[in-house]
Image (cartoon, rainbow, N blue to C red):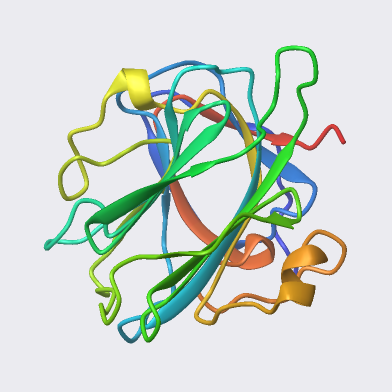
Length: 224
C-alpha cells in the first residue's frame, strides 16, 4: 500500500486519527500553552506490562514545569508520568508512585533538543532515566507492580484524572519527536545509540504511529 503523503496539519479544537503514520522527519509543534491541546497516543498493549522503555526528543525554552508523557489508568492517574519540573529536575511516576531526578538540563544560553529515555522493571523496581545518552543514578519504584492495559496515553499534558483534569500551567510548549516505547528494558548499548539506530518498537513506533491530535497542535517537517 502506498504511504499517504503528509502535509503540515493544523488542528484547532478538532481531532483526527492518522493510523500507523510514518512520522520520520516530522515533529509535533505545540505552539502555545493550553488546557486542551495534546497528542493522544494509541499504544499496542494486548497484555499488562511488567517492564518498558519509553524514549522521545523535545525542544523548548520553557523554564516552568511541564508534562512530556502522561499515562493514566482507571486505578491511577499517574500510571506512567514523565514530567520536567524545572530545567534541572525531572519527576517520574510508575503505578501511582513518584520520585525525582536531578539533571544538568538546558540553560538559557544553550538551548538544544533533549533526548530522554525512561525504563522500568517490575521484578526489581529499578527505574533508569537517560538524558542525552547519559544514565542518571538508578532508583527503585513500584516493585512488583503490573501496568494496566486500559491506559489513556498522551503527549504534552499531565492527566490528574483518567483522560482529563488537564491544567494549562503544566502543558508543554515547543517541539516533540521520535516517540518510541518498547515492552522491554533496553540494554546500555541500545540506550546510548538510540538516535543513531532506532529499533522498531512494539508499543509505540514513530515510523508507524497511531495517534489522535486534540486542540492546537501542528505537524511540521523537522528543521534539524
